[in-house]
Length: 231
Image (tube, rainbow, N blue to C red):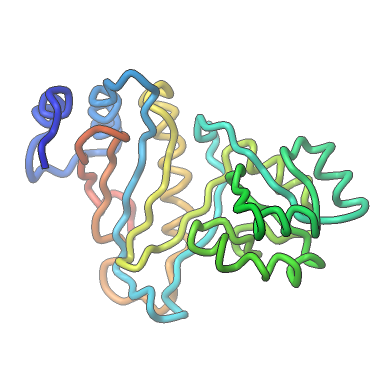
């Protein structure tokens, strides 16, 4: 794969085979974020678990103290008083059967987070094939199936992110934008990694955090020392 001039310049800042401390890694990531847009900084964490086993799943949600830097569009599927509460909390879209029909029939997906009240899950279940593959299906574990839809909207807007394993046992999560600078990114990273360490399954054997890499949207990966996270 051929890379551009800016990427090749960025690669020179990263020492091959070196494991960096968090602050140094974030400093480098911020320097490599030279695109004309405000690049997202992501962390990729490989865990020593086997996601094929139910007792080794790692999944949850956490509110990043400095948010993600992204405007989050919420859809709340609910009715009655909950619908009013969701609207008052600032949800972009609120509805029930009509929004489910719109997603099913028109392929409407102009939202980033779907929240549902528990009484709506029979209805929301119809959207599994559409929302599931996109990581948009509401779940109690992520706090997106809840009787307190207003709180869920507020948290989503404040920078709540969901973390979960992919098929190769890696968690991919945004921790902010290059413009945040090292200090704010570090606060977000520490919060996320604290949640991942806390979510360590009891069935895990051996080293839990196998590897940890930070990268901007267009930049090279910077490896962190996985032993620094105490798991």
